[in-house]
Amino acid sequence: MIISRVEVTGAAVIIIDKLKRENGELMFHQSGGCCDGSSPMCFAKGDFIVGSSDVWLGQIHGCDFFMSEDQFEYWKHTQLTIDVTPGRGASFSLEIPLGVRFLIRSRLFELEELDHLTPIHLGPIEI
Image (cartoon, rainbow, N blue to C red):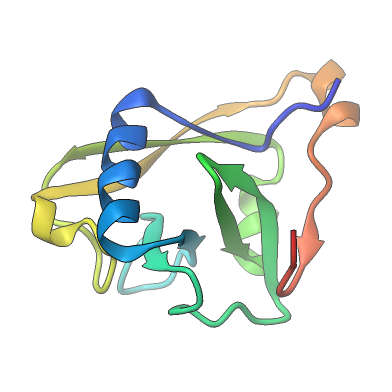
């Protein structure tokens, strides 16, 4: 049994579907940088260049989800759930015009789950 490192709520799926209709395939990235904090950012696939220090955590609703390697060190024992809330999105994230923003909810993995997590990959990945 594989346990996903990243999940998505039903409310976020509705927004992702709307953004897919408008923008095509999507991807997510969480940098943890100073300007965007730890908000996950949504881009049209290919509009954000994934670097060799980015970690692929899995997919949410068919969208690849990446995180900077430094940020991953803080979150590696945590399951992330992407949700949505009213408010202004971060920088260039696609949900901004919709009046909502993506956010992360988290929980620590149980010890017995750690051996069953989705494998991570560094850098760009073709799935």
